[in-house]
Length: 114
Image 1: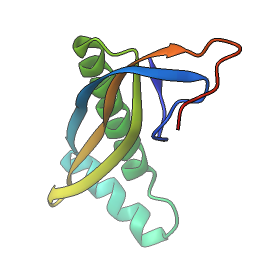
Image 2: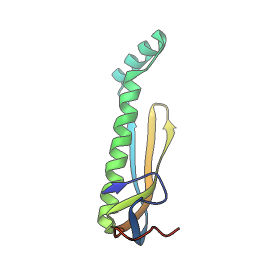
Image 3: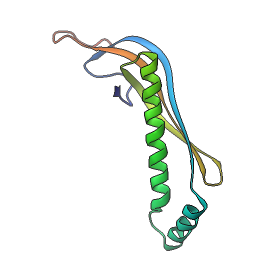
Image 4: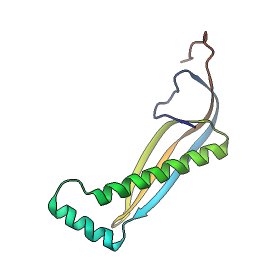
């Protein structure tokens, strides 16, 4: 699956637009994790416990996005974005979304349409 943040895919033609695809992950830290984060906050700097949580949530959301686009019959996702919200204290929602499309490579002598 090709995934890009741009609205177009260089060297390819969009054959069919299948629509919005998305993946959602909601994650929280355990009580022990929150206590550990509190100590990191007091020291200052990067809070690695929350960094790992955020990265895991993004990865899960991305994988769900790709799975949904595949189920729709897409071989690419264009205009991919992330959005994140805090739903409650230490509970974060991460949404990955984009437009599921079917693309094919341009012929060597073909120029992209704009």
